[in-house]
Amino acid sequence: MKPFATLLLRDIKLAARSGGGAALALSFFALVATLVPLGVGPDLRLLARMAGGILWVAAVLAALLSLDRLFQGDFEDGSLEVIALSPLPLELTALAKIAAHWFSTGLPLALLSPLLALLFNLAPPATLILFVSLLIGTPAVSAVGAIGASLTLSLKRGGLILPLIILPLLSPVVIFGAGAVALSLDGLSPGNALGLLAAFAFAAMLLSPFAAAASVRLNLGS
Amino acid sequence: MQFLFRYANPHNFMRLSGAVLPFTAIATVLCIATALYLGFSAPPDYQQGRTVLIMFIHVPAATAAMNVYGAIAVCSLLSLVWRHPLSDTAARAAAPLGALFTALGLVTGSLWGKPMWGTYWVWDARLTSFLLLLFIYLGYMALWNAIEDEVRAARAAAILALVGAVNIPVIYFSVQWWSTLHQGEGIISGGTAPVFLWPLLLMMTGYMLLFLTLWMVGIRTAILQRRARNLMQAAGR
Image (tube, rainbow over all chains, first blue to last red; front, side, top):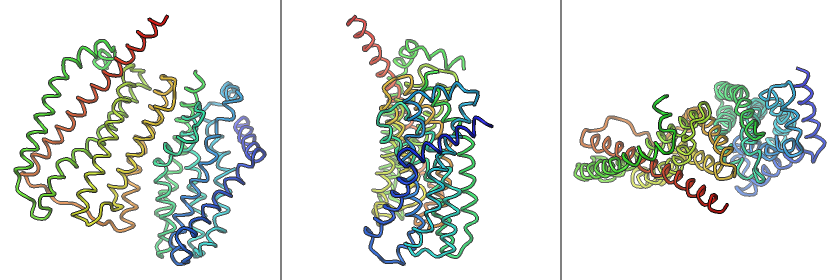
């Protein structure tokens, strides 16, 4: 357990201290949320109706920004090979990286979302559902994203191809996450949607470390 | 397994596929021509009129698009688990065909939707999940092309194909859940009359034969390209 925690803390520290990973993602998130009213007009009723979907899409895109660096920094300076040699299985390494990405991106995005929901005039109960759905769903974004990040590891411009690979696979997350908010706006129980979202997130966290580890292995040439 | 590996040798595969190819090509033409004749001679549907003809090229394209993804997933599994040497080439050759069938299904579907639903596009469960399937195909092909090292590209693409195979049913289910949340617009249901069913089934067979033919041509081309490259490299030395 100790190597896992060490790696997790190291990656969180790296994300926090180099280039301000979370701050960048948060600014991007807030900027997209600002641009949408500029595009569709300031009608608050319309914006409240759209808030769940817009904020969910913006959050997924913001999380994508830092994904291509998930393994690449360590790959380029060679530390990924050292990490691969450690007693920690590569699957758990991938899981630690996924968790670190969530702590430095998904969690801050979820924490910021109530503030942005306020700007969209989203009703308080629906805001709570949005917050909870982001909290549950963003780990799936990090987990599925890790597969894409490891597949595009050796590419110089992997950042361009990564979204094309990952976004279709993430459509269930957006559907259930934004769907939960829409259900709560209609006065229905969002439990069903949140449950499905949680199920998807658990499955993604359980399975994607294996896929990510396999593709890291092929890129290390072993 | 034994059978599969006998034709893993490119030389054996070239011999077998060269012998089979003319027959599948002729069978393709026969199937599609008969289906077209039967389709055009079928009476107009009482609701859809002549636009029912679009069904004969639309539905087989949609089923073919899904079958091709299945073929890619099986090839990827063979390549990852048993290191079957030809299956990477096969998976790569199948992808553009699958993307084309998906695009054909989407285009013909929207051409049918204009007179029937009054709009080219509705965000219906099937249309949406097919659009996502097209993007999955495009991402898969882009990954193949992006990685220069052929062995790495093959294994990365195989992993992606299997991840997609696990995820596609989930996407389909979730899109369906989403579209019932938004009240589905047009749901086509009910049995199909035999005058329409026979040409349709023949057309489906024709499409699959067409895929098989083009797939073999694609694999053969890839093998020949590799041989030509090796020869050129040898001559260069």
